[in-house]
Length: 326
Image (cartoon, rainbow, N blue to C red; front, side, top):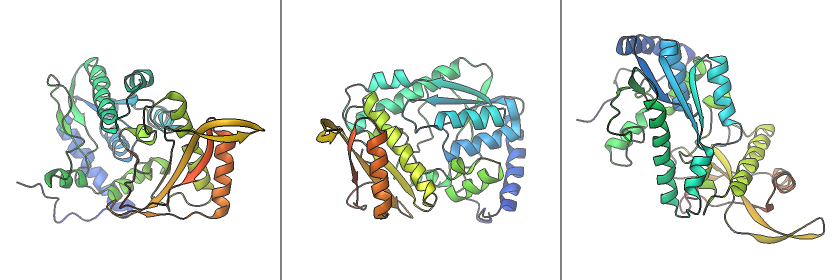
């Protein structure tokens, strides 16, 4: 039987409604968990961050957060997770830098699906290893939201939060935002005191920058993606585009072209800028930037990011192009 969102539930659109939801969930969580411990994979994304903040309010140190840095996050993201949750919210946070482990496994792998499988599989392995070190964990918290449930039931995609852990790890689930839509999760996150750049974070793929580094991932090209992406985000914020454009990022493909710098020949990668808008992700339109901003981005990326000698702009909508390159 299909799961149904409570019909009488009012859409959460105001701080007052968010606070009412938070108060109710805190009671539910305490009743469900009691004095037991709860484990959460904290990615730094909107859903897992809101779940973490809500559980910290409800059960404090009984929540154990595990943040796995697979080396494919955007610039500054692992540091922000540590600052917000460990330093500001006093969370029981385990930070795992697994960069070398992931990049070693991905070395020489060019097939996009194989890359995704390696990243997803390795993440589960690292998370499970950390979980086995802990005693008294009986619950697993997840950032499942209502669209996940709908898409899973409709057969559109497998429920990305469900399953995946090894057979020997049996946890009861805690899913405090499962009946919310993404916009409601953001309102709740804001009321919980999370910073705007976490609450209103752009959609970010599970495999991270791995899908924006087409072909076999190398550390130097991955760093070129990370640095160029940071410049793009900084300039969008400066120019009032942050929050107005749905998603924007850079891609550094695995081919090189000839260029000139300081009177000498270069043979470096191009950097592709993608800036898009959508309401349902089924169809995507391109955000047209001003000539002045594009010129400024070109100058900054070429002069500040090692290994880049061209900057291109992707004008392709969806369809025919998908949002990500892999």
